[in-house]
Amino acid sequence: MRQSQLFMPTLREVPADADVKSHQLLLRAGFIRQNAAGIYSFLPLGKKVLHKVENIVREEMNRAGSQEMMMPALQLAELWQESGRWYSYGPELMRLKDRHERDFALGATHEEVITSIVRDEVKSYKKLPLNLYQIQTKFRDEKRPRFGLLRGREFIMKDAYSFHDKQESLDETYEAMKDAYSAIFSRCGLNFRAVLADSGAIGGKDNHEFMVLSEIGEDLIAYSTDSDFAANIEMAPVVLREDRSSENLMELKKVETKHAKTIEEVSDLLQVSPSKVIKSLLYIADEQPVLVLVRGDHEVNEIKLKNILSAKEVELATAEETKEWLNAEHGSIGPVHSSKEVKVIADQAVPYMVNAVCGANETGYHYTNVNPNRDFECNETADLRFVVEGDLSPDGKGTIVFAKGIEVGHVFKLGKVYSEPMKASYLDENGKNQIMSMGCYGIGVSRTLAAVAEENNDEKGLIWPLSLTPFDVHLIAVNSKNAEQAALSDELYTQFKNDGFDCLYDDRPERAGVKFTDSDLIGLPIRVMVGKRASEGIVEVKIRKSGESFEVPVSELSSFIKNEWDKLKN
Ligand code: 9G3
Image (cartoon, rainbow, N blue to C red):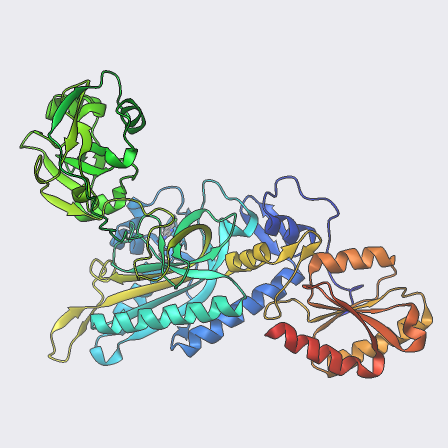
């Protein structure tokens, strides 16, 4: 394409309200423009990249056996009333009325729509499993849209839904989708992890988030240095290090600790390390008091606690509740001689503590030389703490490190969360009516584009991977007023097209500096400059990613470019 024709409004200055690199650069390089908060237009360069991301998604989803379809963005309120989500979602779900005053939702996701289609059309187990996907615009009225395309209110999602008779069939499709996602994000050149995530509100069992490791990520993940283990901080299991101390058990003692309440104050006052203090926290789980014990240098993971207690509601007891149940203030409670009515659950590391300190259930007093099993019993021990950096990886390979991540994909085993209330059933091989099981699988397509931009840039601009670049080669006539340079450039433009390269030809009557600055900004992988040495049949080739440049005779240019292209590919 001739750049003199291309609609690519670049900006010299960094836009004021763009806080991350991808947002700044996509605006400055004329890939996107904002229409309203969280609502963007894709200009020609942005659309070309978006199209390539979508095609990679399409190829891998088709390869994995999912069938592409398209559902409407306008969704009957009745469907969301059937699933109950018309009432459970707040202002984030955009709603409108048609001319007949009928209620509609603007599609934030499509579980209800797809389930209503499948329940009407699929009646026999012979038609299962079924895996359908769409690439479509979604609407979610985010309270705080931010970071450009990374968190928008209108965005492009690939959402797939699978339907099954047996659990094994769902498990199989779930793995196939995870493999397809790994292929997609690898082809986009992203450094990602499939992260075990918390089941959260939408129920179902397993689910994994696909996280791009990024400084600006909003999620914190724990991953192994030596394997592909990765988990959301909430879900990361802790491997118990049974380092039993060789100390002799000392006699239990009660000591006055006056105003020392926090772990730090108690460990300072008694001159012991926090890892020798039993942190005792009273929780109320579904109205029942539970005394939770973790080592003083660990933190209670309330998601794990809730899952272990299979409680709907778990929260720290108030000061009054603590006093009522354990006759002492927050900082002085503990498991020794605690009220029989209060269940005690301890993190798996607590039983290995020797001669520890804990509150004496008397305000201003603590016990020292506390030894689990001798001085108190726990009803239960479990993995209750947050993982920390340096912990062993649960798969036994390497240790845990933390990183921030951008969620670009999310796969769920839904089970019957939607098919039950919406009565999506089929006749099994015995002619018995059964409810289908479902899975759902999402990719933020526009968010993926932004994540690629976020992880592939330098101080001069974007650096597109070959798989997504809007054009393959940037041909620049350094001085398009110079007849020789213009003539050779026109010739090379034709040659690149014949060689199968999608070429952007900067034929604008601009100064060389402007052309090079714009070229660095939009970030095409290979640049060919036709300048002073055109008369000698020599052009300059520059590789955007490495910054390397070469003087190449025109006669060797075609093979040189193909060679550089192949080198960049691997
Ligand atoms: C809503 C609104 C926001 C939402 C949802 C519904 C997130 C909602 C979860 C999912 C689950 C999967 C299919 C593709 C993969 C993800 N935000 N979720 O259901 F009404 Cl306003 O979307 N859906």
